Length: 370
Image 1 (tube, rainbow, N blue to C red):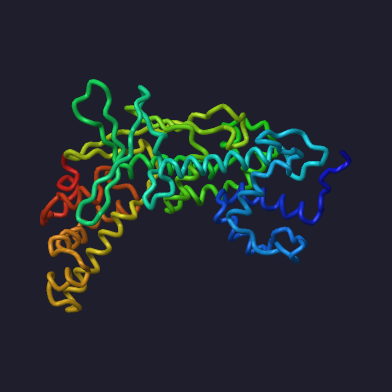
Image 2: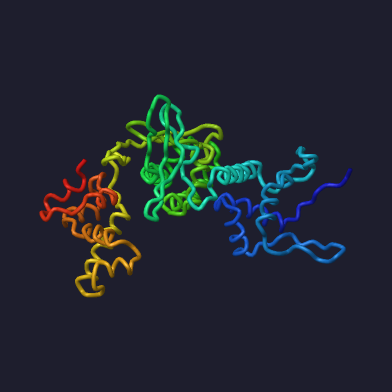
């Protein structure tokens, strides 16, 4: 047959743009928004009933477009693809990378990534013997506490890691990696120039994702870049997908973060060894709120602790705990501000410490005592 597909140059540019932008935003929902902002339109056709198409892209039309094998010069017949007689609009590499992201996003949905509270490392975290950790959570006082639990053979009790601690280690490591993209490409041994250039161009975008707080976006990034995370006694090992960084498709890169486990009563805290100072926003907020609430009482803005508790929709005991946090010694507050405070000093440790000593010199030992 002489029939073959003929490329429309204008529409080919739209298709190429959508493929390239999808690799940056990595989400069909976000691509819908981007396409609308760029005023990209679906193909206009004239049928027996009149003109159709030419409107904004929907999720369905974008999924169909991104998975359409005719754009790489193939034809599909009965679920099998064959080389066509027409030219490709997008490169094989670009098409395959888009399919990998779509497949990763589908895995995210299957593993709870579309949940309001997706676990960043679900299906990725294991110990050095290969035992997997399972995400779980508890609810207390209207607050959700997330953990990763592993019940190894021969153990009577499950080993539990606070999700916030292990996820912080991973997020900081990934953020640091994208802050130094040259190091990242060197680790990956990037051989694909096109993929390497794309990764370099998107490095700032990915760094912002790992420094952000959107759990769904972070989960998408974790599935895209991480092949696994191994918790070892003295370090956390991140196994990165080299292909996602412009390296060999089926290989992994290992990044190790030295860590220690600090026990505070029955709780565990995972600490990065020799880490650069990092502020604890939750701890800073707790202290600032305690100071503001004490000021509200002193100035007469509120008449009593019970009135303050009613205004803030919390208990009087909680108000007292936060006000006490505002009375930490100036030296300890300065360390918290710099991010150089003891690792064991957390909002949980401060809340559990009880009334602080009147002598400022004893505050640190009192709060972080084991």
